[in-house]
Amino acid sequence: MLRKLYSVICAAELLAPRRLIDAAERVALEDPAVSERRSWVVPGARLEGLLFLVMLWRSDRSYSRFKKLLGAAGLIVLLRPRAYVDYGTKASYRDASTVEWRPWVYTGARLVGLLYVLIGLRELGRS
Image 1: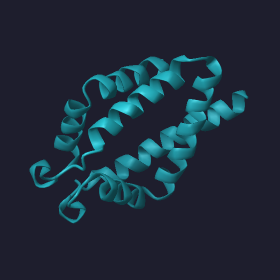
Image 2: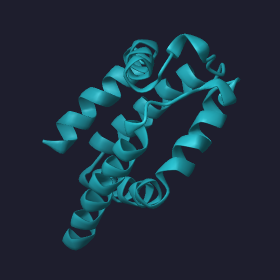
Image 3: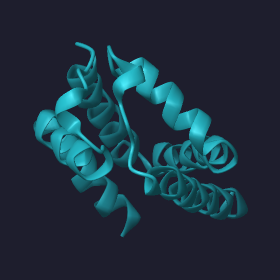
Image 4: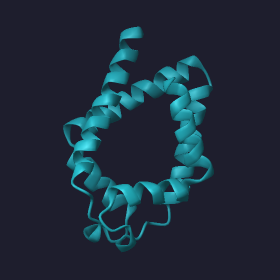
Protein backbone atom coordinates (compact mmCIF):
# COMPACT_ATOMS: atom_id res chain seq x y z
CA MET A 1 0.00 0.00 0.00
CA LEU A 2 2.84 2.40 0.83
CA ARG A 3 4.37 1.80 -2.58
CA LYS A 4 1.10 2.72 -4.32
CA LEU A 5 0.56 5.80 -2.16
CA TYR A 6 4.06 7.11 -2.84
CA SER A 7 3.65 6.27 -6.52
CA VAL A 8 0.62 8.55 -6.74
CA ILE A 9 2.43 11.35 -4.94
CA CYS A 10 5.56 10.95 -7.06
CA ALA A 11 3.54 10.79 -10.28
CA ALA A 12 1.84 14.07 -9.33
CA GLU A 13 5.24 15.55 -8.54
CA LEU A 14 6.55 14.40 -11.93
CA LEU A 15 3.56 15.35 -14.07
CA ALA A 16 2.19 18.45 -12.31
CA PRO A 17 4.82 19.78 -9.91
CA ARG A 18 3.63 23.38 -10.03
CA ARG A 19 0.06 22.46 -9.09
CA LEU A 20 1.28 20.21 -6.27
CA ILE A 21 3.59 22.91 -4.89
CA ASP A 22 0.89 25.59 -5.22
CA ALA A 23 -1.56 23.41 -3.28
CA ALA A 24 1.00 22.71 -0.55
CA GLU A 25 1.81 26.40 -0.23
CA ARG A 26 -1.87 27.34 0.09
CA VAL A 27 -2.18 24.92 2.99
CA ALA A 28 1.13 25.57 4.76
CA LEU A 29 1.98 29.25 4.20
CA GLU A 30 0.28 32.18 5.88
CA ASP A 31 0.41 34.17 2.62
CA PRO A 32 1.66 32.23 -0.44
CA ALA A 33 1.54 35.37 -2.60
CA VAL A 34 4.42 36.90 -0.62
CA SER A 35 6.96 34.21 -1.49
CA GLU A 36 8.95 33.85 -4.68
CA ARG A 37 10.25 30.37 -5.51
CA ARG A 38 13.72 29.87 -6.86
CA SER A 39 13.87 28.79 -10.51
CA TRP A 40 15.08 25.25 -9.73
CA VAL A 41 12.17 24.27 -7.44
CA VAL A 42 9.69 23.08 -10.07
CA PRO A 43 12.20 21.14 -12.21
CA GLY A 44 13.76 19.81 -8.99
CA ALA A 45 10.40 18.50 -7.83
CA ARG A 46 9.87 16.85 -11.19
CA LEU A 47 13.29 15.18 -10.99
CA GLU A 48 12.64 14.03 -7.43
CA GLY A 49 9.34 12.47 -8.50
CA LEU A 50 11.06 10.61 -11.34
CA LEU A 51 13.95 9.35 -9.19
CA PHE A 52 11.63 8.20 -6.42
CA LEU A 53 9.39 6.39 -8.91
CA VAL A 54 12.44 4.56 -10.24
CA MET A 55 13.43 3.59 -6.68
CA LEU A 56 9.89 2.46 -5.91
CA TRP A 57 9.49 0.22 -8.95
CA ARG A 58 12.92 -0.78 -10.28
CA SER A 59 13.22 -3.73 -7.93
CA ASP A 60 12.34 -4.91 -4.45
CA ARG A 61 15.90 -4.04 -3.43
CA SER A 62 15.58 -0.44 -4.62
CA TYR A 63 12.20 -0.18 -2.88
CA SER A 64 13.84 -1.37 0.33
CA ARG A 65 16.55 1.27 -0.08
CA PHE A 66 13.87 3.90 -0.64
CA LYS A 67 12.25 3.04 2.71
CA LYS A 68 15.62 3.16 4.47
CA LEU A 69 16.29 6.55 2.87
CA LEU A 70 12.93 7.75 4.19
CA GLY A 71 13.95 6.59 7.64
CA ALA A 72 17.26 8.46 7.52
CA ALA A 73 15.63 11.67 6.29
CA GLY A 74 12.85 11.22 8.82
CA LEU A 75 15.34 11.10 11.68
CA ILE A 76 16.64 14.54 10.75
CA VAL A 77 13.12 15.95 10.50
CA LEU A 78 12.01 14.29 13.74
CA LEU A 79 14.93 15.67 15.72
CA ARG A 80 15.20 19.12 14.11
CA PRO A 81 11.93 20.05 12.36
CA ARG A 82 12.48 23.80 12.59
CA ALA A 83 16.02 23.58 11.21
CA TYR A 84 14.80 21.28 8.41
CA VAL A 85 11.95 23.61 7.40
CA ASP A 86 14.11 26.72 7.72
CA TYR A 87 16.88 25.21 5.58
CA GLY A 88 14.32 24.17 2.94
CA THR A 89 12.85 27.66 3.00
CA LYS A 90 16.23 29.29 2.39
CA ALA A 91 17.02 26.83 -0.39
CA SER A 92 13.63 27.13 -2.11
CA TYR A 93 12.63 30.81 -1.83
CA ARG A 94 14.44 33.92 -3.00
CA ASP A 95 12.97 35.95 -0.16
CA ALA A 96 13.14 33.37 2.62
CA SER A 97 12.87 36.00 5.35
CA THR A 98 9.35 36.92 4.18
CA VAL A 99 8.07 33.32 4.10
CA GLU A 100 5.81 32.71 7.06
CA TRP A 101 4.78 29.12 7.79
CA ARG A 102 1.58 28.33 9.64
CA PRO A 103 2.33 27.31 13.24
CA TRP A 104 1.33 23.66 12.75
CA VAL A 105 3.93 23.10 10.00
CA TYR A 106 6.77 22.35 12.44
CA THR A 107 4.68 19.85 14.42
CA GLY A 108 3.44 18.33 11.17
CA ALA A 109 7.02 17.98 9.92
CA ARG A 110 8.00 16.23 13.17
CA LEU A 111 5.08 13.79 12.82
CA VAL A 112 6.00 13.01 9.21
CA GLY A 113 9.58 12.53 10.36
CA LEU A 114 8.40 10.04 13.00
CA LEU A 115 6.37 8.16 10.40
CA TYR A 116 9.40 7.96 8.10
CA VAL A 117 11.62 6.73 10.95
CA LEU A 118 9.10 3.99 11.73
CA ILE A 119 9.00 2.96 8.05
CA GLY A 120 12.81 2.86 7.93
CA LEU A 121 13.07 0.88 11.17
CA ARG A 122 10.48 -1.61 10.00
CA GLU A 123 12.45 -2.11 6.81
CA LEU A 124 15.72 -2.52 8.73
CA GLY A 125 14.00 -5.22 10.81
CA ARG A 126 13.13 -7.10 7.64
CA SER A 127 16.70 -7.03 6.29
